[in-house]
Amino acid sequence: MGDETEQGSGRRRGRRAGGGAEARRDARRGGGMESYGFIQRSMKPFEVLTDEGAELIETNADLVLEEIGIEFREDEEALQMWRDAGADVQGERVRFPKGLCRDLIRTAPSQFTQHARNPARSVEIGGNNTVFAPVYGPPFVRDLDGERRYATIEDFRNFVKLAYMAPAMHHSGGTVCEPVDVPVNKRHLDMVYSHIKYSDKPFMGSVTHPERAADSVAMAKIVFGDDFVDNNCVLINLINANSPMVFDETMLGALKVYARAGQATVISPFILSGAMAPVTPAGVLTQTLAEAMAGMAFAQLCRPGAPVVFGSFASSISMQSGAPTFGTPEPALVLYGAAHLARRLGVPFRSGGGLCGSKTPDAQAAYETMATLNPTLMAGVNFVLHAAGWLEGGLVSSYEKFVMDCDQLAMLQRFSQGYDLSENGQALSAMREVGPGSHYLGCQHTQDNFQTAFYRSPLTDNNSYEQWLAEGEKRIEDRANEMVRKWLSDYQAPPLDEAIDAQLQDFIRQKKESMPDAFT
Image 1 (cartoon, rainbow, N blue to C red):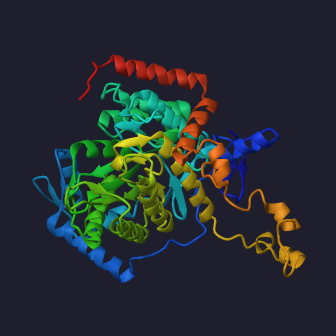
Image 2: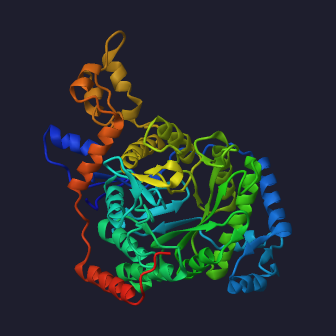
């Protein structure tokens, strides 16, 4: 892939493919031939919550912080930091004087750069920007033979490669699947290394233990250098509140490591409405804002100016079974409202993604995914985890759905560019040339623009029924399966300095040798 930046277009292009029809088809399929930059939206966010409604939610969140409080469990250091900051600490419960959290958050940047090892892949998080990142966390995969099974480190590497190859995937992500064939206490080393080795896009660190977070920072320093890491963001990391209204020792430990290192943390309440928060969107917004503000403020106690992202993951549930449900209207309302609240707070926002409850990449998966991805773009989300590959309520990373979702992400990226109002975009020359009663197929303007005028999906079939029959009656899942196999076959690793690679491998070897295997 090339580094050359095409100024003003919001995309980066690699070397031109060779000539001929097959080369042009390969370019349309993606596969690393072209990589888009992060989205720089030209349209205003769509607002559902009014300013008056936002003020009411903010007032209620302040009441939650002041009267009910947030528990910071099994972390005496965190509790003492809150005492020193002026909070009321009783046991593990912290109550916050009105305005304390908001005042602390003012030192956080409203927008920041996460640097990639290839500078052309760095992303801007915040403002009018949107960054797509892959699915995060599933212990299972649905593989190319249709089997649902536990994920392995080979699956992990494959998803990193697919994210690298996907034109509209801007970020390598984090736990793209959980490689259960590697010991729990050592797998983070292989996971972080995979992001560095097999991609040159930005990536996430480990949060499952403070020492693993420290290892992630140490590996980033091998790649970027100590001074650069201390003064720049090279890692972004997911810190979940244990809703309702709790931060636990594990998340706090990782948060402290990353914030003190100047690395970004996504402070994200994980809420299943009706189980971990009230059933109403307004209630979910109130609790989400309170929890997120407490976490973001704590990051500023660790290091003023540390980058933070206001996160929200909110799902509805089946009130019959308790199972999470996706693509429903209420979480979309929460997403729109939380995005509005984040803008008022002056921090970047994370939410949305390609969420669904379906067990296979079928019509249910498609409907539910787009019912979340559309609000994600329209609400102005800045950092989008789970943008591709999510299946079965987040239990499964699906190879086929990954590339199907990436096709939709590319469409959304095209939509985000808005209207071309240049002379070419206005197309008056075409109307003058054609005039009444004729057609535009042969006019000069059409000839000049036909290759780029419309987004061309590499997966959808728009041919005749007879041609579809002749080509094997393939469903979109079949074509996605073929695309994944081709991408993985065509994959070529981005260059990595041999000395840096050797240092990383030596670090991993020493860390693994220093401890016995643990699978719990």
